[in-house]
Length: 419
Image (tube, rainbow, N blue to C red):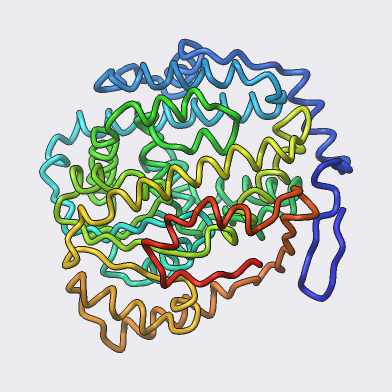
């Protein structure tokens, strides 16, 4: 249910969802087809699906085991949530098998340089997606459209000379949109939408993607105990394969989790140019947890509004503290702090500064490409959700802001949006 004013949409049943018939059907189907969350089941399914057996370096197996154990221990993960977790793990394992098979047959792939990539970090809902959409319009830069992110290896999907991946992704997006129509206002997953490199981290069973599906503090804590550099080196390997399939080999990519991975980003991509997006964390949080609460009508057995807020406020604090701690490890000549309000006011001016720092020419062709992307990616093109921390989550914005004062102190140009 929602209340609508012009293009503004307020979801009024977050805590007590009123399910559509399609949502009820999805829950019923999942309940009738229960899922076993074990690493053995995931790997066996991937092998059966692809006909391949070589997963490459085996260090990922420990991470996969933690994924599955943490998900299995989530007592309020619904049948849909368990099914989603399993199917995503099988997809990633299948993609890994195909990637390793491609490298085995074409070892020259590992000689392809990934030249001076532009890597974006920043909180979820802080303008990273908008920045990436614009920069991906530059044909000199390689990016990862969603249709390619979910099926990165082309060969298995080419039938009679036609690459079926875009068509499959479009059908999947249409189904998602039909079941959860407000998702596109939160995070679009249409085929041509540019994806995060969290998809590539997932090939090595790393990254915080899993945290958006299930309540898995065990996985969160496991990540903090280990260096993410090897996982990001696997991302580089995936980029080599993707550039071999279709160039160029200078990448632009992003992931909000890079805020807590800055040393690992430098370790895996020492010649990268890092752009860190900054936005009022309260604005980012209210958007993110509203989206999580909306999705919970399918993935959770109950919607715990306070629990969602508590977990993600803590998670944001970890991201922000790591960013404050590590920001100065990246030289000013190889990085740029991009503020949300400045990006929205003057996208051309901000991106010209980014390009200057990254030593990429910014000419009229670049401007024209960006203008087309701006016209195509207008904020609120699907409608705009209305957020209310006080009414929906019982939280005062000032309380969050006080908790994050260390971030405002370090980046005083961040403009307060939610009061």
